Length: 439
Picture 1 (cartoon, rainbow, N blue to C red):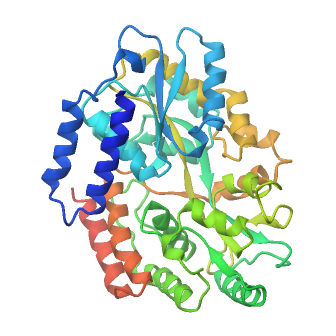
Picture 2 (picture 1 turned 90 degrees about the vertical axis):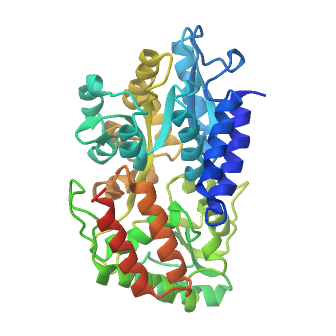
Picture 3 (picture 1 turned 45 degrees about the vertical axis):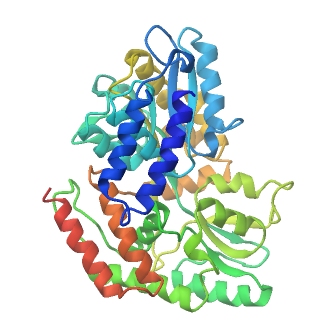
């Protein structure tokens, strides 16, 4: 069995254990890691093509764009054509970002050389660098910084040092049905009023988004909280700026949206794809999701609403401006790679090559190269991103972000679903944020 196949099997077991962490002791999770090392998955075998003596690079990245026919594979093919002596292949990770992180962490904790290039969610930078898992990119900093949009470049740094190359950015959009709604709402109150009225008339759900207990729900909650004027930390994450009043406003809006029917039935089980499918099949008035949805929902062969929707900035509570979470992926070089120089060349190339970045944009994955946005202004997705990205807010790429996210999930999810007092939930999050900066 290949290293990748065993990692997938171990990843599935780890997923089961971590989702049931109150029933399984931490020692059980440790045994999974030990099993990974014992089975020889820490490194790659010759058949995997990533060890010493081979020129091939392995790019560990997840999501549908890494699937056969996806844009990441197109980009890998472009590199391979230009660099036949150091070709790159994709080791496809799961679609869920948490599961991607788990599989990468298993390999990196074991100091395995199976991954040369790491496709990383923008929030993992601090954790990975502090753990000693990344090769510094300070020597190529100027080359990358001069072409990257500021927010994306910032997400690839930690404590002033560059640890990754910005690859694709992301920002949330409001998708709305143009055959049912004349103008998109600018406030959440307007969205509720319009969604309930049209939804009742048409017999469809007013609003779908990412409400399941995972990182996507955290992003949705933060967009409400930031949209109300809240902040998590100061600029260098040395001081907590958590505002319990604004956080309570955000949670109560979510709770009210469940009770008044603004949120679709089953909202608390939706991830990106579930919410996309609901909207794309014509079963919702509004959708909060990422830019990748635009091309899929425009496909007349696959979508019930092709030509019947448009995109707009996300509403805020005041109606002024817009706030979106800054998402996306960066590429980094594993500290345990056997071919670091070639891996670094690939990372720089993917960040600075205009053809690569243009292809990402044409695939509705927001590029990080600033000049590409000027070239793609006729594309409605790129045009809106040009408006939204300057005000998009990154989740802090702190080493403790995963623990912070888990705490927000454990507190806010039951609070908005009526299973916990919202005031207690926001107080618990604030207390944990304070603890996180003391560590």
